[in-house]
Length: 120
Ligand SMILES: [Zn+2]
Image (cartoon, rainbow, N blue to C red):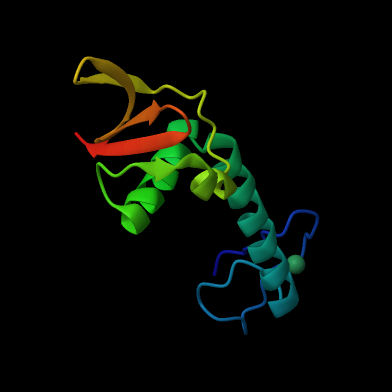
């Protein structure tokens, strides 16, 4: 049988034959540590690659789930979402007004302090 070594960085132990067939580490403890390491790496990757417009889309979705489309919503009521209004993935036109388009959602900030979200 081919010798396999523990995949935990820094450990050079062989994977003992008594470990289960698809074991990638020398022991249970190193298995747990490797899993933690991978989860942390995945989380970092997710954070680094999270697209601001995807984050904005999720935030807008949350608003329409709670308030509905084409409703005048007080911006203060959704302030806690921390939406970055400076992001403009795309634009759309509605009644002569230019709004911001995020995938299939569009929104217009109207004075004094409201937002209207449209399904495009
Ligand atoms: Zn090990």
